[in-house]
Length: 522
Image (tube, rainbow, N blue to C red; front, side, top):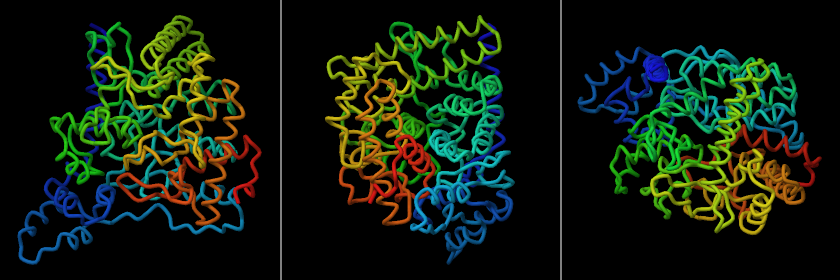
């Protein structure tokens, strides 16, 4: 009974907190759909990030009065009533000053001060923070950990702590860390890297950091495990699934069954080509966005067709490794506080999850870690770089790690680093693209098991590509074509973005780790 009351209170708190923040579609019904469907802006994210110049009520009233008038121009109306956001910066670097100077300067260019914006979709944060760059004008959850890797190399611990404090603020206000600090992201989170951020800061600031953020760690854990207590076998609730053997594991989930506001026209268009019920299709689209891998054949039903997306039916290996790390971190924090009972409880939770990951996410036939479809009770047949997460968190056996290393070297290693999947679908989280966070998790995971030569080879190829592109363009990019390094990366719902937070962070971390001279990138 007490657990049920806690769940009810959690849901009530979250709903009440989110009700205070209305999204653009909620504020501007009719106008929102008209703008997003009429291609007033090339990118649907532009309008949802715009700031109204007058009260939303007055703007909507005026729109409804004028929209049917002869000569009414929708774009002129929007431009007159909203301040339109631009890209995060128009910074032009001095390539001759070198890549390290470029990154040091970007920490300032990409930093935002505490928010004071009102009447927009922005969720105000109390401390300065780093944004990724380009169209990404807000803090992003899992991006920030990889940005922090570079900030730590630059001795920017205060910036790291400010960002962690912002995430703690979001947990305390909304019950979880949203995808980003926008009202339209309040229905989903992202890969839960908060515990890694706390551990990263603890390396330089000491274990007191773990006890400082222990309450928020537990709150985030409760968010991911919401609804677990009364789940029957082979059922899911929100982000948690009770497996056939009774074990609890996690999946990606978004509470909404509507098109994403920031990608409205893309989702509505894609929905025309699915055989799924629309609410289920939108849940799966949004869940993929919650994974950070939006989009990839990883989430599809054995094809290259977005219409077959089935994210919510999968137990993602990377997510459950992150949950394992969260459980261990919470256990450690309780031990530091002298609470032996809760230390043992969370240690046991982590041990149970590790056993489940090895049972459900290791495929002995292919010798690969991957996702498990809890509805069909079958292992996914799409190999991806998510397989490196059990190495990063030391869940794999030595023999399993060796198999992963062999598979990476044989199948995933390309001239520019590691490709994300082996499928060429046109989706941005498939071949030929490579991404900084996955390069880092693979490299660090391989180092954990003594595969130093392969780790260094991956890092060297990635660094060489990043630095060469920088010298040619003066930019560090969101993603790279690692198969044909003469071409730029493609795919996705928006043009290639520069900046770029997690690329900068991983690049600097790896350059220092391997004593890599930027001249080697020539």
